[in-house]
Image 1 (tube, rainbow, N blue to C red):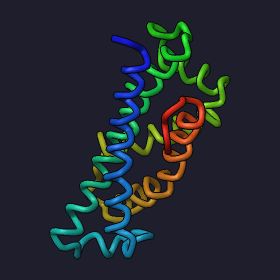
Image 2 (image 1 turned 135 degrees about the vertical axis):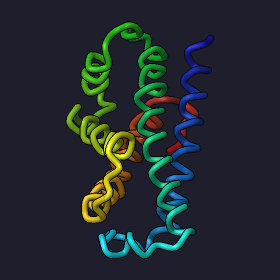
Image 3 (image 1 turned 60 degrees about the vertical axis):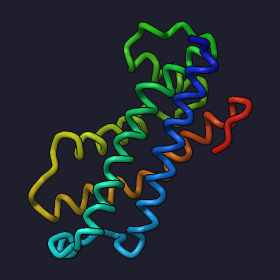
Amino acid sequence: MNGALVLDEAWRQCQKHLHHLRHAMGALAANFPVKAEALAGMDDETVQDWDQFILRFTKLQDAMGGRLYPALLDYLQEPYGNRPMLDKLNRLEQLGFLGSIDDWNTLRVIRNHFAHDYPEDDAVKAAFLNQAAAAVPLLESLLKRVAAAVPGFEA
């Protein structure tokens, strides 16, 4: 498949996840910062909003790492298709698409909290949710870097 087409599809997928992530954040605005005590008394609608937030945060981070960044490197004719993700991240940092690999690793750790460790302790849960909410601007800024480099993309 054409590299530009693959990149465009990955971009649209990321934009869809970002749209729904922002929508969930808007619905949850009154809940920030999250307090442990508030988690125990959430109504069903708030639980659904948090579930949507978590789902879209993880899906966006996954789509960026699994689809967008590899497609971007291919589009830029960088020979990184079969290289390990760390090599890809290093190259993306060199090209200015990542401020630092540490930023990406932070996003990955936050994402993994939801994918692997959904704790029963409300204080820990609240901390994870607050970390994720605070990281959304980083996801947005990384997408803006891609948009600035690819004609026709808007962030």
